[in-house]
Image (cartoon, rainbow, N blue to C red):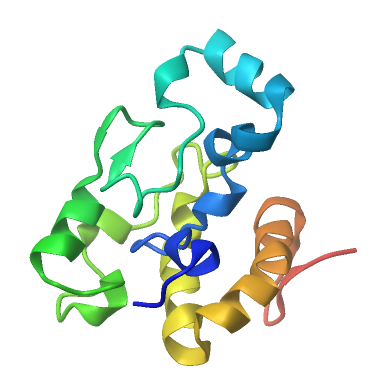
Length: 144
């Protein structure tokens, strides 16, 4: 595992915590107030990311089972474990339009094959293609 904010903000599941509103609230009082108005506990904000927070995700108000699994198996990312991918990473259509869950396996494969630095350079484009891309068969999601 590499040290530093950039690396500790990439969760074991492949989600980039640095892109989360709970993390971004650190420098933005408007986001902070919005999250509090949506039921987030003020004392839990801003979130430092799942790794620095020992898997205690403010979005789920409990310790993340994926974080616990990775910790118990002494690996940095889910892809390091022999049972990757497991059912926790199974895609789901439920709220796929607003939650980044379906991106996890793709992100983890990018991190494994190309390294976390390259993943972070491409993260913005990956996110844009996921949320705003139009699927073209044989070409993947395209940005118009």
